[in-house]
Image (cartoon, rainbow, N blue to C red; front, side, top):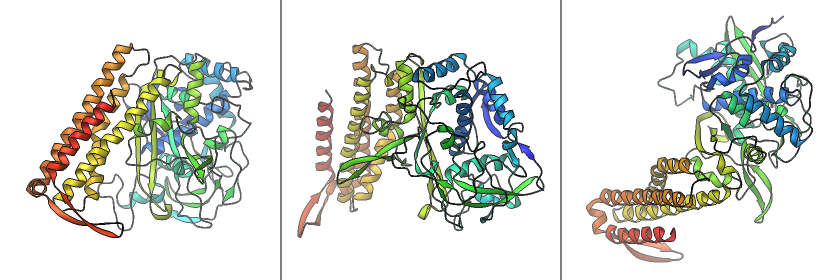
Length: 526
């Protein structure tokens, strides 16, 4: 019979960066009790860190929604209790050790990586798709026709995972698993199918606290629910469940049925089958996602998690983050509630981080991962900051207009030089956003709603000057690259509806139009 081995509560398996900048591994218990002394999680990937953050968050929620600072039973039943409980923890600056340690010790049998009857996040005796260990290792982005040239894992080591590696990727695969497994084919992992976002603080304690939502969307209570280790062991595969109405259940959603296989001190493979899934439509229990509209005949009928675009800078979705036109993320609504109640300091610097993966065709296989981060003053989230939210959204729209001006110039210059125009225009548009990215982020960091009106106008004027100069410099470069052919221009026959028309493309005429549009853009912002 399988013996209990590798306790996630005692063995070091979660990579972190300590407050002194050194990297180390800690146990699950240490990660929580010592969270104020940990700068950040430091796993093999940002997506893995997100999956581990949600595991830690589930423990914190289930403990402190049931007991107070002194470990006395005290269920959260009102919004006042929710914000006060949160505020008491925040001001303490660290999680009280006794409630966490007593809870985890009570459930310590459910936190063994290998266990006769309840191995962590696994199903004993599972018969599913047989996979080698390297498929679980998300740091090995490899396929039959694309092999990673510079990998930390080579030869036999590619098909072996240490116990701590396997534990991390086990948590990851429940959230980000693809659809490649058979018997039967699973749904895409929950975290891989939403627009995952998390708030970040100065250390792991603050990060956990900023994502610790005691009151759903800051507006309504949670229902009672159990995390995966307290719930009954799931038996059936590909099980559709009702949308969880408790964060502990959703944060530990068992998206797969998995059983690790080991030889000696190595995990060499695993059995995998489809697990739990639920509808994404109006899944408002998910507090860590951006939202997009579901429309029917141009009428909004609901909301669904909005997936991230890997090449799109996070600040371009500022209005979505703030919920100006769609439903706002639950963590943002909760932070706003805390600010209204005075539980979170006014000028706290906040970061929001997104993370996601790119899947292959038909969501089979993980090809790459991406992440982004955006910093701002928390004052932007209160009533005084709403005016600045509008200003920022307007500037983002103006960035889009600026990129469009550059895009039109690139199209014409490429046409004049003998090209097709479209591909060059798309490249120029993305390059414009790439160049606008650093100064826009710096400008956002200078925005403090408490500033005097004169200071506000000055930083806005400086940002707009930088933005125009970036576009102008790029315009000169585009014309210069077009060369003599673009300066001379050419006549191009094109279809316009059913007719064929002739158009003359040349760089000088296009550049004059470009300068005119730039000046119009500048005047529209005054």
